Length: 87
Image (cartoon, rainbow, N blue to C red; front, side, top):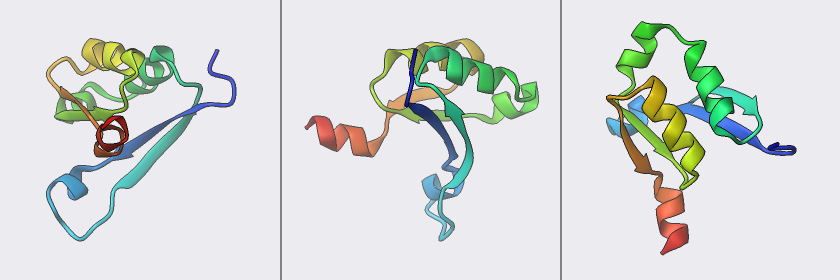
């Protein structure tokens, strides 16, 4: 499942706050599934997960499901690239 695909996890905090610093790559996880994101988030500390305010993703429902479970207070949005692509 997810062979040949990866889940890319990026910290866009500075990008979101319009600083001059680019987004920061946190990890690249094998597979494209709810489990890939769920496992990565579960390995982070509760403090880290509490700080997650927005989860920007493509339209894949698995990412929405995993983020709802592990960062339930975060807002889930579609990233700008995929919004434009769908338009």
